[in-house]
Image 1 (tube, one colour):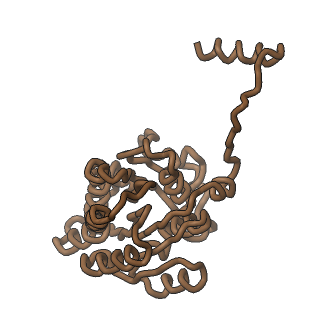
Image 2 (image 1 turned 180 degrees about the vertical axis):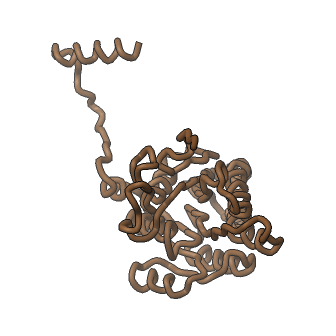
Image 3 (image 1 turned 45 degrees about the vertical axis):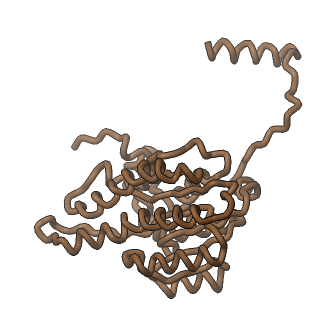
Length: 282
């Protein structure tokens, strides 16, 4: 049916029977065009001083947003403040009091937050016989718990506002494809990122009262160093024929927070060049 429809439309076009629409068409042809149309928002990014988080923070800043970063790296964070006009709060997200103080700093300065990107994380790969409760707990404390605590604080703040935020809000959690597939020695990391994916749809329900959508991005191999370090084999194993870049994740984060994208909610979206769908036998 779809093919017949297209054939009829093409026939109408060739014979002059197809009228032009009177409504304007808005087509985004480049990232610059998307940035130009993006409304200014107040954006908080954890772990935004380096790696994927840094690219996310810069992408929102280039789009015209106010951006604040919470990160433990004071040197890299200060460079963001002085060189790029991004607000920086030094804090260890594994410390609940420090995280709350940093978030209060941003909320009091801006009166509200429109978008939160929970990105901070640590990766450990070690033999299971060398594991411990302290290692597991610390991974959870950095990778999973902060997203929950920030959502709790945000909901409390929104409840106290005299009027609702007309935009609602967006929360984007950064998980990993490792919550779907694993190598040896990744128990702590995989468990923490699986928790992020599950937390996503739980928070979706709880934050719906304030029209805050909650979605999860699960990156695969995202190379944050020099691309010259990569081999031809690294690229060839991906169906997309390349290794991921931080910008691949940042563009999706920006897309999920666009005003009209409030019907994307509770999703876990892989950004992995197709690797989690590739069938591999050795």
